[in-house]
Length: 191
Image 1 (cartoon, helix red, strand yellow):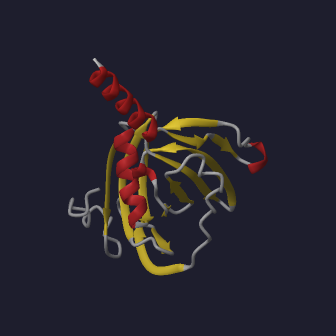
Image 2 (tube, one colour):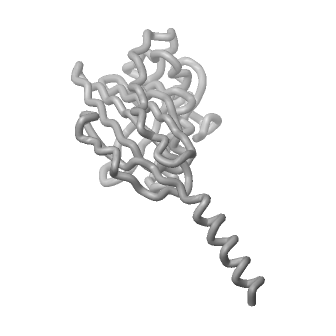
């Protein structure tokens, strides 16, 4: 009986040791986040900053939370009128996500071009580390077409996030200028 009790205590100690406390906060301005808000996590704590730019207007959204480690992504996507970046800082100690992830800086064009639509009648100039062309659609509430430039980390992260949330997708990332045209995408660069 004592052996069973000892094993139970050891098991509970290990289970408790793997629980991680993370700050939990979603905000548009850092002043609205209170450090005492926290949540128990089994994977990693993170601070995430997403920036979306459309037609000259910028929106920045920051959150501190518990996430699966596969969500620890830094990258960008550029689909013509809409550009987006994600910056993530992940850590694995209690309440380690107090520092907000900095927004990724605006990057210059890198010389790569991708199709902005299936017919490739319009193109997008890739910036920074956007070394992939992306094409396809994502369905979650509404179906959205995606054609343009993306960084490798964004393409990899998109696969993890859509799989995790069971979001329907038919998205491909490929390497090479204008490789996301209807003729160029043949499944070789599948996400």
